[in-house]
Image (cartoon, rainbow, N blue to C red):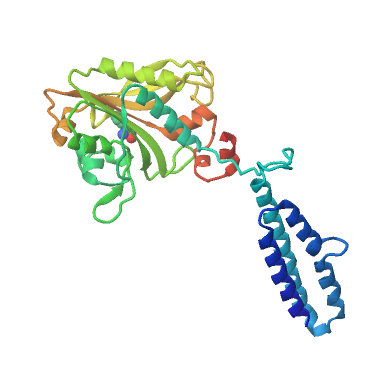
Length: 339
Ligand code: PHE
């Protein structure tokens, strides 16, 4: 008996709410009829519980709670729908709070990537992409890193089947693009890379951006000017100085590591820069002629430069994030700050 009455009320409520459409006044009438505090139908149903034989009380009580929840949810949904549908009609109360959707935020690494892309797009570069699961040839051999080369020790990675591996840097895309296209080439390549590394400053997955320019008559002076322009733009709020230090990469000759003055102490020396006043920011160099030969670019006619930097590290510097791992744990307390 009791259960049947619940079903009737449920059916009647659903029919009423349906026929109210988006009309706010109709929805309010329905609310009073069913959920009114002094005389609503739900009140009657609650009172009826007392009359039931004990063995029926449990099931009836549970079904009644479900019905109450249904009524509350549907009324709520109908009410918020009513606001939007009446937004332009007469009697719309413009002082009602709107429906606010939660606002998303862009991840700091993504923000850095966009910022760098904008700088290079202005300089006429294209943005390229390449596979994260690479073959040995593009990740190593084409970049002048044969199987017994010691440079492989610094870039141990995760191997998958078929001799493939998770790429250890974005440099393989240099080789891929040069195989497919004749110079002039002017590209940057942002993307994920992988290494067998994990601590405060290293994560097994991180992000790099690669740059490559190949044309006739490209000099080390062009490399210097380009990277200085880039770094001044990227750290424009900090007014950094840039210095080049001789270095070594198998696929560039000569090679240089590039530092900026520490953005935390302005170059006087602090904990972040290990009291040196400088922060290492990228690797670069003139493309080694052996790389050109391996991918079919005429090394007598063309020269070029390449560079690579870590996006995560730039995000840490620009936004003062002390632990690299915070970028990847998905804690919204970090990302919300960028909304
Ligand atoms: N691929 C190098 C690295 O990951 C960086 C680099 C890129 C150096 C291009 C020189 C030229 O360490």
